[in-house]
Picture 1 (cartoon, rainbow, N blue to C red):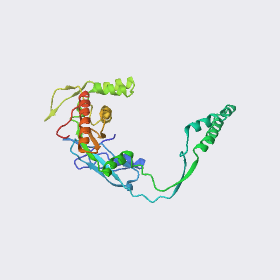
Picture 2 (cartoon, rainbow, N blue to C red):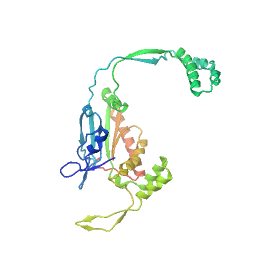
Picture 3 (cartoon, rainbow, N blue to C red):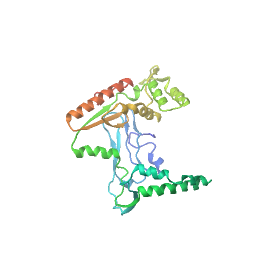
Picture 4 (cartoon, rainbow, N blue to C red):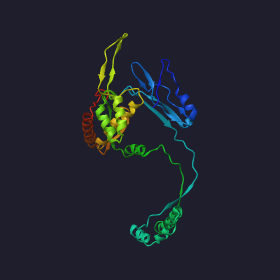
Length: 304
């Protein structure tokens, strides 16, 4: 993703809006999203072509890592929709065996009488719909209301536990020096399992291998030291490679729903009682510990 260095005065040296104007998008984030002791960088953007539909946006500095969270709140006020009429199939009296029997008795051999593929398709469709209309006739249904595409199944799922007054337990996990401790051999193995071709694997292996680093103190440079693990931060590939590396963490969980943002992971468990929730979350935390150990990562216990 694009990143922009923020100067001491707080303005971007290369404004994201200059990149967005030609495609008629507005960039909503105007402050650094990754702050270290030596730099402040805007690396996360929210783009919209209808800024009037966004009531609020900004950056939340959680303090869990040097990478902050961005957010945007969409307005829910929508105009009242007109009544619509939909045509749907009525499967109330549908019998699969009778349907298959009638299908088998249709003159499908008529399709072979035509050479044109479009005509063959029309004949097949006509024969099929004749049977379907008898077993699952169309009926009219009136509807009113607009669909809300931003209300996903996940958001609906998060709201249901609160409505049912169940117990909820959430654990915030922060990985210690996550980008710096990525094991390159494990990363390349995962890329291979995801189907990356050998030439691309060799290219990435060369990109990660034989990297060196040095320190500068008061103008004096130290000697170079070989970097044996980790992925380059501040690069375009860095965040993508990190996400690929931790993507299979979800496979180790049995009870928790997961929200992942960079190196911050949130586990959420709901249950009928506090005991049920504790047992479930502790079970998944044990699995997380085993996964981290196998992947040469560790938790920051102070921030978790």
